[in-house]
Amino acid sequence: MSGTPPTLSLAWPSADLPAALGDGAARRDLGRQLPGYLRAQRWFGGAARPLREARIERWIPLDKPGATARTCLCVVAAADDDGQTTEHQVVLALGEPRDDGRRAVREGLEDGGCRALLFDLVLRGARRPGVGADLVGERIEPAAADPRAFGEGRLLGVEQSNTSILFDGGAHGRSILKLYRRIERGPNPEVELGRFLTAEAGFAAVPPTLAIGRLAGPGGFAADALTVQAFVPNEGDGWAWALERGRAALAGARSPGEIAAWLDREGVTLAGAAALGAVTARLHRALAGATDPELRPEPVGDEDVRRWAARLREEAAATAAALRRAGSPDAATLAAVERAGRLPAPAARNAGLKTRVHGDYHLGQVLKTADGFAILDFEGEPARTLAERRARQHPLLDVAGMARSWSYAAATVAREAPAGGSGEGPGTEVDREEGRLARAARWELAVRDRFLAAYWAEADRAPVRFLPAGDADRAALLRLFELYKALYEVRYELNYRPAWVAIPAAAVRALT
Image 1: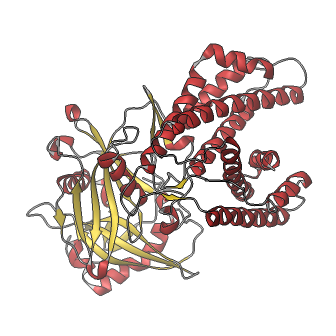
Image 2: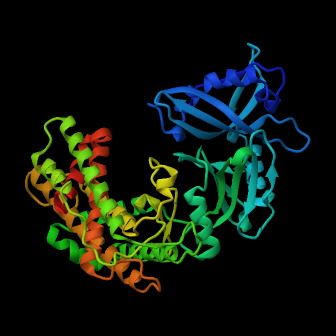
């Protein structure tokens, strides 16, 4: 899971957790302990967030037939000092009495039986009643096998905002059960788009959505809680693949001028960049064909373009302020940020369509497969509200995100390259560093160009035109979205990785 968080405990005479949660005093006792427990969890994402209180407001017993319910899926409302309240799913299990008479309360997903039960409930489309909410499963794909064939599953080691469990059914294939730790009232974009891409669009380059688990309760309470997706065999994520190819290029080409020839001889990198560009365009083609009212695209209007430009000005103002607060900002970067704040809205004619998009698209959100790439995680940027993540955006917002990701990959391999290693020329360490940066910049330009060329070509074959027809209009909008993302990156790096500010700062200077 996520290290050793503070332990929870409860004074209760039996191992019946639903009975304990039904007792107001016991529930309040547990609630007093929850703020520290939540803040220690990696999936909570708020170690620095001061919590005023945490309350268990809804719970669903996860008991096997005829057994005492020791485990519950709980909905916890966490309120901070700023008045923000968020809702989270916590699976709790009540243990045996300790020497002090209290019972330990632990993470329920550590128990294989609990994992298997959740998987079974969702995959079979069953309903499990609870207090304040029921868990309702919905099968999207016809059942291919008895869920019991998949065993108890195992928790995957990498846990971020959600918890994923891998179930191996042997001849029946493998599936991943994802439990959304933070829930919001309304459709989760990943569930919503996963259902559409799987069941309606037939888009093959995503993990097929097999089933969905929702919470439903009185007063219209509804939230997507879990999803089951087919496991996609892969060779790792796109970020690892890009770093591997970038390292190979810097090792194989001794000068910036040799990068293009090396890439042509090697073949793999540019073919991969083209495959990623094409599958990105096919994703946008599928989303542009949606007919459901919640997904159906809309024409981009002049007001949309003005709104995007205003958002860019807001980003520029916030970034300029952050640079000044950081002290002694680089004059050229600050001037470029200020120029970004004065850029007029692009005069794009017939700017295409607003569609649902991935929303947080980068190399870490794709898997390298044997025949191309598969696209993951359609939840959108975690810091955005649900309404923002479900809003229609221009498809080029995704393209800009991937372009910025190529830039980070190039900068990473340039910084990682060992001094004096293979491919390093003579001269001082400064000379060698400048040579690595120059070769990495040529590599970035080559893979970016191949990615974009494949994207444009595939997009132009779509039956529904979702991009501007003119190259100049496409370039103007892509520049706007890239600049928006680069400005945000400057602030992010200032806050968390000051040594990396130079990467997005260079992009801001180039784009302005």
